[in-house]
Image (cartoon, rainbow, N blue to C red; front, side, top):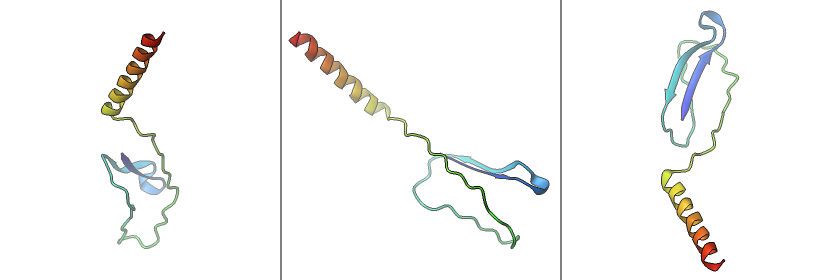
Length: 76
């Protein structure tokens, strides 16, 4: 949910030039660099964040646990 590009070196040393948050579909990410032929892209990292359960899923889990607890009391 975040794409961030930071330049290290030159006059833009450690300057973030692109920072976008949102929802991005599965696919490829590409760069188009027309004005600078000798640019070298490196140091890419991908940090995956574990998915957060949806509220509806959490509600269903809660109902299931409540039902199990109720059955346990009934048969005890």
